[in-house]
Amino acid sequence: MPCLFALFASFLPRLADIFIWIARPAFFNAAFKGSWFWPIVGIIFLPFTTLFYVLMYTPGIGLRGWDWLWIGMAVLIDIGHWAHTGYTNRNAIPGYTATPTTPTPPPTTPSAPSTPSA
Image 1 (cartoon, rainbow, N blue to C red):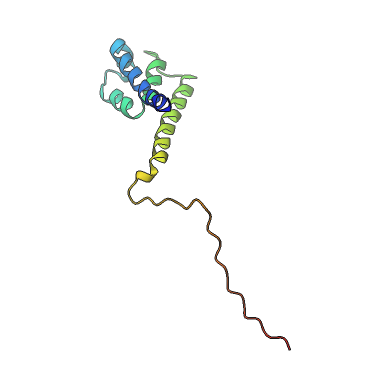
Image 2 (tube, rainbow, N blue to C red):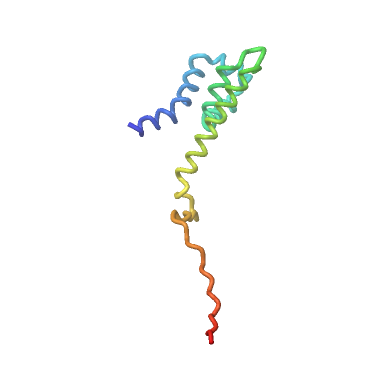
């Protein structure tokens, strides 16, 4: 079940972007001024931000006021996704050495030789 949730969470915004682009191409044309390059880059790398940008964009006005809050939240969601993915797969990075999980004891200092008492 968690794997199914992860699959939906990763592909749902991309599918929503593609469905909106197919069903309402005027939304994407207005938001990205007819360009096809930025929507594709957005769908691949920042799907939530692209989705929110297209839904919040008002033709002739653009984004204003509280729209920017939603765009900012979408950017944080996308960055969080990338950060979590990198953190989860950190052991797959070549040359990565994991930090020890148990703390190492501090080095002991040699004690000074004791002098015999008379």
